[in-house]
Amino acid sequence: MPFSLIPLTFRSVSLRAVIYTLLLAGLMQLILAVDAKHIGAPNFSETSLTEITQSILLLLCTTSMLIIRQRFKVLRTVSLLLGAFYAMSLVRENDLWLDSGIFDGAWECLVAMIALPTLAAVIRARRQFLEEFAQVSNSLGFGLFAAGFLVTYVFSRLYGRSELWHALMGEQYLRVIKDAAEEITELTGYSLLLFASLELLLMARRISRARAIEAGPEKASSALDRRASNDTSAP
Image 1 (cartoon, rainbow, N blue to C red):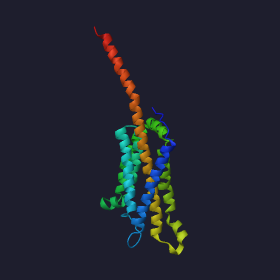
Image 2: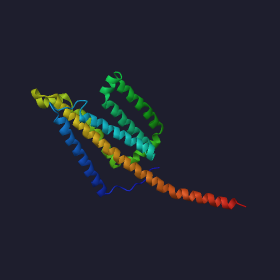
Image 3: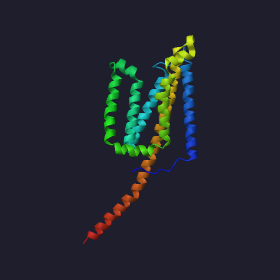
Image 4: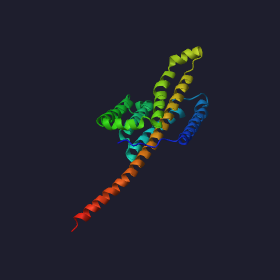
């Protein structure tokens, strides 16, 4: 049954905005210092800090969903679906290493192995999923997730099209400029997804605490009822 949580205060949201802004600014400054000013030429290849950071962010997102599901034991279907989504994105982000290190098409097999059982589990528990979705749909975490999803999986793909950059740069076209624009946009989207995961993690903690508080009086009442029943039945 969904819980009615106390809305976040303006102060709390403002503090989060400052923290997330500082984290994002620090990350962009690091990319500037390491990848954009790379010795010899800018480096946004698979071995760049940008690409490595993308994988780390996705790993943190996946871990957050596991904590929600396994430790707090709330929003179990939502966290399962999002965790699988992040895990598949992590696999896709490392497709080059998987294909070269294991076999060609390895990442596709791994994605299928994650997607199929997850979808089957969510479909079986679809009523629970709909209840949980209604609970998170108006949350800050879901808003950040929607923004991160659109930036990463929609806008960055459109923004990184070669034909767009050929049209913009003409004969001065440089592949590294296009790669930098696309990868940095993806990194921004993954950062938003991490912020969303952290917000959902905090929300799960609040739900877990609310359940514990609600269960406290019920357990005490149940214990008193059993004690009264035992006293009544005693000779």
